[in-house]
Length: 101
Image (cartoon, rainbow, N blue to C red):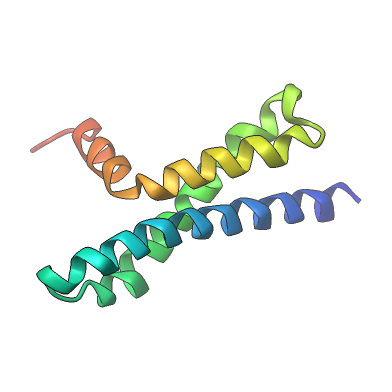
């Protein structure tokens, strides 16, 4: 069943994003002892952004014919991990691309 197969791939992308985010959360937690708590944004802002990044990575990689086999899992893990680790940089770039009033 292709739908179940693609659902598993999407869940793989989401898990990869959260794994990448755990690396940045660990770094921020160590630095956060000096700058205060960032815990509220972990439950509001970041889950939505990680889901959006997962959707973007899944949409890109599912359309590429070269990632139709097991290469999808390697490529998606790397892409999702990097996007999640750079989630703040990604959001800054996205805001710069939007038209300013």
